Length: 345
Image (cartoon, rainbow, N blue to C red):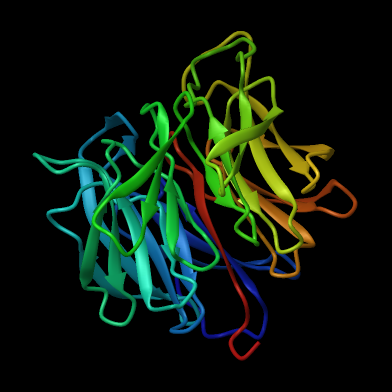
């Protein structure tokens, strides 16, 4: 289903098992359109310069280490007309997942897993042509999420089971440093580049009890040292920094009677200030996996893959405003998110 341009901001949500992108009006939360894409979209990124929406196609089915084959496509979408305009084959790269536009707007970075004799890496595409121009290995097989510093000069890669974050000089041929952490998931940089926030240890949705040392590591980028940890009871997957410098983290909670994907209880959104204080927490959908926020930092959006929902959170009042539902015919629902300001805004 497609629809012509509206004058409202839009929230785009990737439906993993449904192989769709669902568009919601960001003001009144109406469902505007559902666009079918190849199996299975994971993360989204909006390019405001070219008004493109990108979706990484990571696996043919399933998820990390439990999938039906690694994919290699990047879907290019017109977010106003809600239609696919191109599908870029990233072969021989495999399992593109994390995706971010360089602050200059000239490069689109994508994380890819190892294959053959090649390490996992961050791949830079020319943002105009979407042709690869640089491959930067991260010295780990499974980079998944990554973050760029505000000047684009460095990237920090979270490497799942590898016991370190990779520090990457984006203009060089490889990683230039390692920061020890016990496996890692979501990662985000502060707006001034002084800190990186990384979820650790690596998540396991089969664990039913409290997780020792779980939370968000706060890393001083000048020294590479972990200066504090925001502790949580369960694993944290997504981490996000808002325009007002709030740090948002999504905690996984498991029902005591179950294990495995689909056995999750409602998750928690933790909201931290730059001083390290926790402002509060809000209950969200089951298995929070992605977070984004509005450009003014007022609202947070938490996609939960098990409940296939997006919880809209008022970050000033620390309460849920509404819950958006994404179609889910399989085991994995709402995944990647992108906030798309109205054309001409």
